[in-house]
Image (tube, rainbow, N blue to C red; front, side):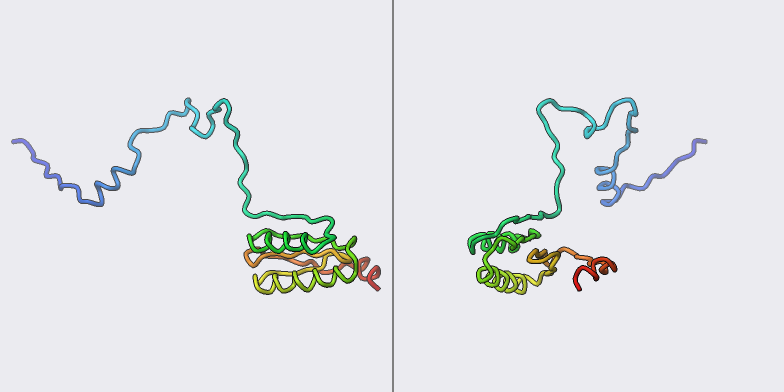
Length: 137
């Protein structure tokens, strides 16, 4: 007598799983799609955030560009060494307000050089070395 095998009908989950699962084995001799070289196609690295270095801020317009960059989520490094003292103080006050409203981080990394970071980035400040402490004193 022949044996009868009873098969259950596949349910909806099994059908969906079969649609998205691969049943055939991959051929190791054929390169993957990401390894194929296409002429004229250049791959670029994608960056998670942008750091803008503003080497010479001499006017309030430069500070506005830095503030707009901070609002877009870009880190800003401001060098205010070449700025007149009165303008420098206005720019520092303005950028402090922008940074406060964006809930960012503000670090002075040198004399009149500032790092301003949006809230989505973490800034770890290493403790000062004995040499740096002696320079500051």
